[in-house]
Length: 176
Image (cartoon, rainbow, N blue to C red):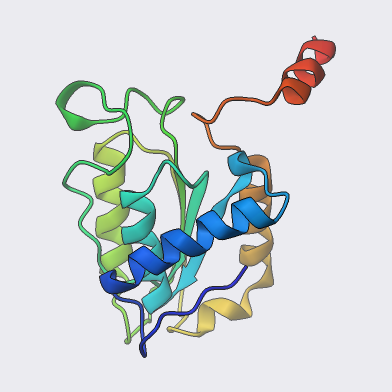
């Protein structure tokens, strides 16, 4: 699904409606709650970083294309924490992260993604960071292999704290 902010760009005031929209979609369509992911670019990249950080109970992954700065130094919302406010370990961390940014981006400086991955690394989160040499703000979209890699990343992930369904447990036990 594709969302749209009420104003010219995403703002924290959109969160209530976004949460209601996600809940509506889960109730209306046969969505596997373990396979919900969020992707955004530019202002949407900022939004998915912030919103995904605050609502890790909803998302298996967050993918941000040249998103603006978000401070991950505080404790995440809706997640179980281990010692010193960090996840209990990468295997228990609910949300995984995928960052794409061009090093020639003059709209949103690449340092915002570099800082974000350093903060996530310090907290023990797993992430992929793709910095594209010479790519400007929209230039990152000219690399289909990056989008393909991101979609493979998303396809491989499931939410780590939402329980398996009975059918999924049966299928996994038969694989053993």
